[in-house]
Length: 568
Image 1: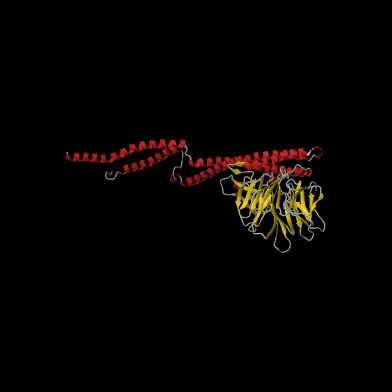
Image 2: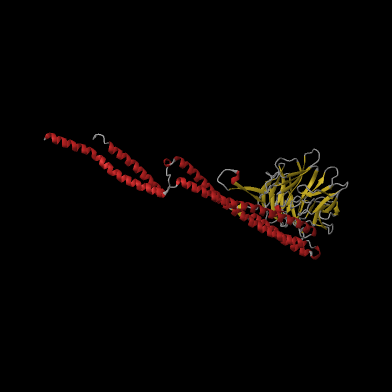
């Protein structure tokens, strides 16, 4: 037995340290509820559980994303449902307007007024349907990413209907005959078949694409696409154009402006200035006002017979709005300007000089050529959309649709014959929903936003004041209803998929949470037992340590006894 080195006490102290650590760990786990509170508790377990926690948080956020996506789709569907209801009412109006035998002109105008109001309401719903300020049913057409471009070789003098559905052009293959076709070039129909030279002028197709005016060897002619009727209108003319509804033809003859009905009746002289050349003639939808340029911008109000001179600056490209309330034009030294038809409420739209041509207004969009490219200007907000990608050769003529998302033009390289082209802007916008925690394609769902304005639906130019217009309107509205129905079915399918994905994501999250809990969470019963065990061991250790410290004293007692015995 040694009193220099107390091995027993040291052993007791070592056990006390281990017991204290064990007890401390148990208390920490009971306090936090976690089995792993630091890396040393379970290094591999910590790595596994951390990965699980990251995935769980990702899945929870993905579940939130899915719920947001479902709400977005529900908002889209509500807007589409309203548009569909309005289209169905427009279908009723069109069918009624086609009942020619029982309707007066006044009746037809009332039907047209209601149809126009519904068209405007469709555009309003399209513009205002948003989620978190993002447009859902309005997509600004993008020409730069569009691949939908067609070319019709050996053609020129192309004209596009206001609704963007129909084109008319002259074939430059030696025949110089006139053709009418769908805007994508399909269903081309030869109108004329003679040795005469037929040409198309500015705004030579009505808004709904059912009527065309053209020149044939100096004669002004009209063509009805619904019945094939060709009518002689007049001769010895210069500029000519259409009212949007296709009922009135306006042309310049002997340096004055005249108006005539589409069927060749009721020719009326509008100006009496034989020494001034009027050009850039434009008419509103119903033919109540005429705009033209004689160097300055003018508007003739037919009801009051007043000719308003709008400005005193060299001007080109005069155009009237659909309702005839505003005129838009380009001042050579300044830029694009808008004004009320009587010359008041003048508004500078965009400062731009050096343009090589201004080509009329369709809806809110002026088309012009600048630096050998075609641009479309929104006269309401001044925004510009570039329609072409590369610089063009000589541009002969350009027209856009009323919603600014289709452009038709002719150009010529000075070699061979001119060509005509139609460009359709991309009016879709693919948006992705992240519906899973991983960077994988199957963790994303696409929602395709699509423009659902009246122009994109094909009902921008619906005309019910004419029987042939009503016939055409029925087909166009049916196509629009089908388009909206297909879109609702498409997003409904996406919504149903998202609901199933949400259920699966929640199940995955719960399963992963259970797995993480097994690894990371403390077993409270076991930890309580461990704590009690540590407390008992600590008390026992304290008693043993006390006894261990008393061992050297027993050696001294033995020495004292021995020394006392020797002394005796």
